[in-house]
Image (tube, rainbow, N blue to C red; front, side, top):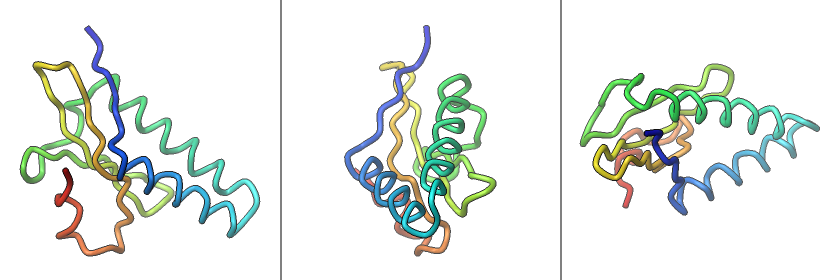
Length: 100
């Protein structure tokens, strides 16, 4: 059975704000950001255990072209992947695990 992917409200907000910011920098760059994030989310959904556990059972999937990490947890019993952050790597790393 496949895992259901869910973005928390905070992760969804970070995602939208980041895409908008990139789009303001250069036309279609926001769309490129979305394509790359969506591709990584597809990879995570296909194999949620691909990326190692870091801290507090959070996993981090790095984004190659943009300085971001997708921070998520896998809930085996629920068959769910919860994305807690689309985290810019220049931010304070201590805050990436302070999610609800």
